[in-house]
Length: 517
Image (cartoon, rainbow, N blue to C red):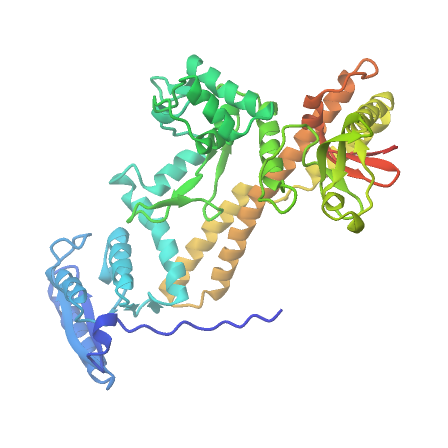
């Protein structure tokens, strides 16, 4: 595949004014820190330089050289000429700005970012001569990202809400939750989460009913019908609220930190973190309301329901409460099997049939399977593992070793340290006016690795727990299993594939067993 990049068209300042002027209206800003004689000479030299530099370009029109002298403040307050330049930009009088360096434009990184982004919204680029940066190009964007990180540190002393301060607390495993709107928990005097016994029973009910087959909508309707209050004290419940509770890892005592992040410390806008910034997972942070085993079963059930496809072209969604629903597949066409009540010559029974065959019989000849056959096959598979426990336990141990060894050898801490090192090198190169394209590419590559690392670790952890669950089950069975249990199907079985003369049962641990029909 060949991908061709089509560059963006260059923008020249205020759109409303572009048709009224032919020349690009250019301004410059210069500043010196003190009013001694040496700095005064530098001040005059800068004004002279920019006046000559702008005037000699026939496509430019000099608006003004804005200059503040004898000012050492770290913010833009008191810089009359700077503020006048910004006001002229807002009035549409300036299309482009030149300045000597970032430190001359603004001594405070927060102010610098604030004004650069304000000017970008007006399509006004700022050129920093020393750093060779145009705030409108891609390199400028990368530097602004790094500057934003520095700005967060600078503003930490002014605001406890700054992202970097929050991130430091996350790195230390400090969980921050608004318990006033968190069903099931309160906070003690030290800010730690403690269980609210009355609300915890509501949480347990939600998890229990979901595993029993109820939908989020049915659970919400039941709570509302019974007049049970939610976290805000209202008896009105929504299915989305139930879904958020079921997916919140804090109920099993853990905490995933930085689910959202502040885009920048200026706008304070928060968005969902999809891997842009690091996340931190704290295990056993507080007392659990739901066991880890129950929580993971719910996550698997939620994923299974989300994958389901209603028969005959319906929309995706959860449609049945039976343990085998949406996990039985046809080996021939790949479609799911549907549970139906069958009346064959007056004899009623429950059977499972391929959806394709139900719609168009000629397209699939998959056999019909009775529900009793499925139950018997599941029990036979369980008993085979129990009877030959040594073989299957060895196989599970091998699967467990493979899962552990497949982990990414580079730790999250090592990735973060390398990223910080590259960010420092990027700043140093810009100050030395050296090319930093390779650094930029490496930062982007490591960012992708960080995202993949989080995904790999989560997958490995989940797979390991599934293997250990089956190991524990096999070891705990003293004799033959004779009674079918739907809960075991949900807990252990991933899917069943129907072949012409046998069933293939795949367990969540990776073990596959074939049962003849």
